[in-house]
Length: 124
Ligand SMILES: [Zn+2]
Image 1 (cartoon, helix red, strand yellow):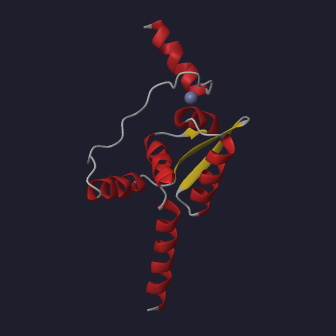
Image 2 (image 1 turned 180 degrees about the vertical axis):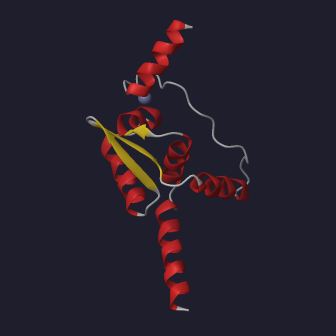
């Protein structure tokens, strides 16, 4: 029984960390692809401390993982099943069963991915 209680407490912790409209948006974006903070700032048009604070809470709950590339930290959903969890929660709330679309370059974003995506679009 103790094991079950522990596991239930862990699940509750995880769900509590997700239980915020903006964190759901963040996790949905990070379940599609990894992103750096500056990209998330451009994508959501929110200040960097706001983004960082929510990322830290999601990371603390084990929902977000990060990796450092040179000076930059990229964040992603820590497990591919998080996308399934979000999809089911979205459907239960009356939303779409479709996975969120992969977004293209965000206007004004100078992150490496947006720079590359714009450069590729110019070549076409
Ligand atoms: Zn970007």
